[in-house]
Image (cartoon, rainbow, N blue to C red; front, side, top):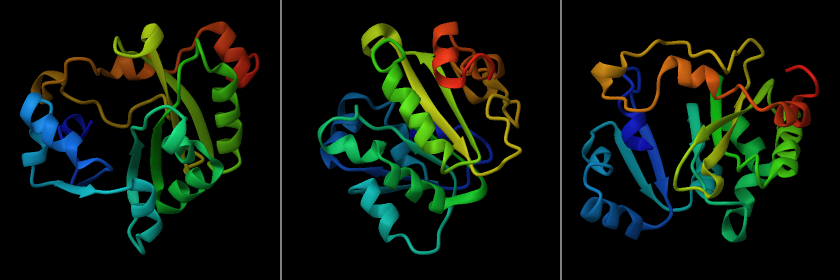
Length: 195
C-alpha cells in the first residue's frame, strides 16, 4: 500500500504504522519489489499499534488516512468500532478522506450496512467502494470511504494521473469511478433505491 501511495506526485509524507516488525523484515527479504517503499525518504515507518499512535498524536492531522486491517475479529475488532472512526475524524484535515477495509458484499452485507450507518453520524460523506482481489475469499473486497467535506465527490478523483508514467498496473480514473458502481442488491441495502 505504501509503495502505491508514494507513486502519487502530491504525496509529501507518508506515515506507516505496522504493528509487527517481522512483517517488514519478511517483506524486505521475500517481496523486495513490494517493499521498495521502505527506502523512500518520504516514508516514516512506525513499528507499533496504529490506533495507539493516533491517540497519542497531539496536533498533527492527515489529508488521507488508510486503514489496511485484517478482518473484524480478534485484535482488529477495535478498528471497526465507532470510537475508532471518531478518532479518525478528529485526526483528519478539513477536506481529508479516510479509506478503510470494509469486508465483502458476498459474506458481510449486513455488517457493511451497519458500518456505513455508524459513519454517517460521524462524517459528511460516506460511501462503499468495491474491488476485485484474487487473494480474498470470493475475489471481492470493499472499502469504506468517508470525508468531512460536505462537497466531496468520493467517486470522482480530483486528479487525473498519468498511469504509464507512474507505473500503475491496476488503477485508472475509470476503475476508480466504477468501484462505486454496485450490484443492485448491494445498492438497495446500503443506499435504498437511489444513491
